[in-house]
Length: 242
Image 1: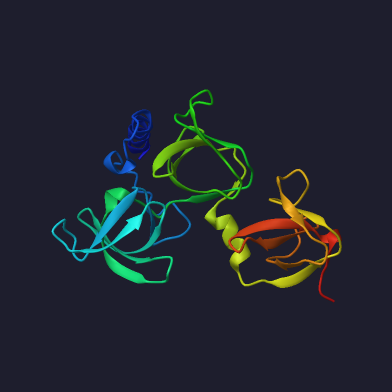
Image 2: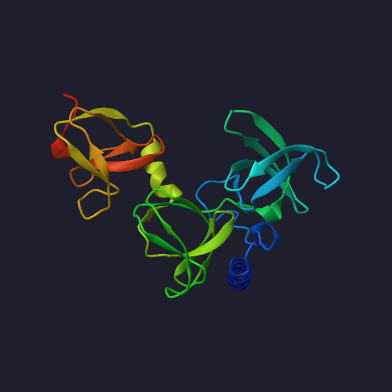
């Protein structure tokens, strides 16, 4: 497995080094099935893949799926997966995709800090291919020493493992159905962690209603942010229910 990931990393570095070379043409192996906390899903790594009505290039096109999209896996055999895809309008499609264009069951990171360096190679002095903001979502498609290899804009990049980020497992803690409304007593800042040493997200206005997603952590409530994410508010700045 380690040799496979090393080979994958070398191929991905070459893909970044050649302008215009798409990940779809260079991605090999890299099947992370079973390594992520969420099973029976895959992330599309190519800029666009075609879903067909049978596991063959002779199959009729059902739809085309953009890079970064998520599909639910049904079966997997002979280089093809059967999967279901739901688009932004709620339309559901089931068909077959080439598995070389997918990361199966990857760990997915959600950044808790801004200015994260996305590197072209596993070296802090290598070219920056991006400086990423907080809440960027990154599928992990491999590792190289102290770096994650992540899918980024239909290509690949290296992220230092020391980055402040949630994994799927950690975020799942806040999706257990716990919810209560909190009202801010004053204008108060929100952070990506339980304390002022974490990165500030924004200020919540006085009188704003925040939805707590769990019990306080060191006096800070985790609250829903932007519908999809989590931020933290100081318990001293909100009025919990009586």
